[in-house]
Amino acid sequence: MLTSSRADFGIYLPLLKILKDDPFYKLSIIAFGTHLSLKHGETINEILNNGLNPSFTIDTLPDGDSPAAIASSMGKTIINFSKIWENNFFDIIIALGDRYEMFAACSSVVPFGIPIAHLYGGETTLGAIDDVFRNSITQMSTYHFTSTEEYKNRVIALKDSDKYVYNVGALSIDNLKSLKLLSIEEFKSRFKIDLSIPSILITFHPETVAFKKNKEYIHQLVGALKEISGFQFIITMPNLDILGNMIRQCLLDFVVESKNAVAVESFGALGYLSCMKYSSMMLGNTSSGFIEAAFFHKYVINIGRRQEGRILTPNINSIDIDKNQILNAVREYSNFKQSAFDGIYGDGDAAEKIISILKDK
Image (cartoon, rainbow, N blue to C red; front, side, top):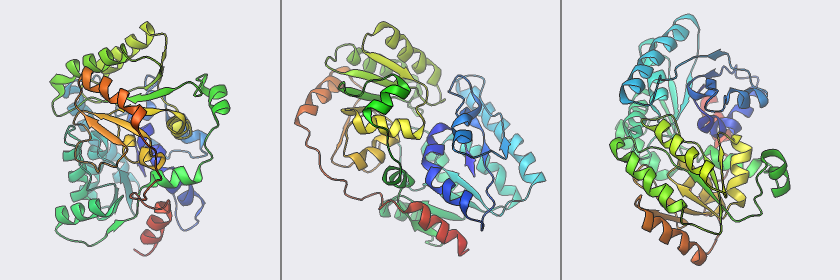
């Protein structure tokens, strides 16, 4: 199983737990990307803290956040992974998502003829270059596990075949239905953040298609935050994408200047989902604002085009990255009416479905 960041590892957890305990499988975890980066929270410790030991760790970090640095990192990833495939045997590779480092790792598999099982194809994110990588991984893969029926149909269209394409639902819903989330008191004890205070959970990643606009985008977001009152801001740090370091620094500078903001490198899956549960709303452009937030029917202000193309559930207010629009969207929170989860992303049994399907192959 390939894991390159805190984000995919947190989603994988329900599947990893079953694979670890099922004697039918011999699980190997390959950790790379930001897992090994101290600056990004050294999240390999989250893997270890869950009782899992990576079989391989690979340094694939780019030297910076420029397009050239990202491209060079992709080349390094392919070279380093090819050595693993050459010297070890695997029946199947499980890969999740759409990031450039996951694309590079999967690309290195193709010449060795090892089948890839891809989670989650068929999704669309028009404001990020991830669309290219996601669709490419879909084309490289043999087995396809999607989170909704709509996404399943997109994969079928991409592959021009429905062979080995399955809608299993989202593993994130498995997590939410099985994890005992932290209470407000437990969260405060662990992270020193009081969620009894009205809070906005903020995650803002670069838009990697129109990446030259990111300086203006972060200026608009921070400008809005400076005018919002009545909430504390809990800001998680962005991915290592083009201009990700620039956005990171702008957010850290804002936290230093603000009396009601805190920056968090990585909560881990349990901490992040607990924070989401108790926060008043979410603001930013993270995929968790679509899937996990739908479970809580949490009010989400989705800004910009990074996630454009994903299914919009009624709890999502999608707007431009504009200070005034953000301020208006925060004001509209008072009119938001919470309702029950409608099950669009499955019933919380995605891991069991994936395991069952793979055993039959």
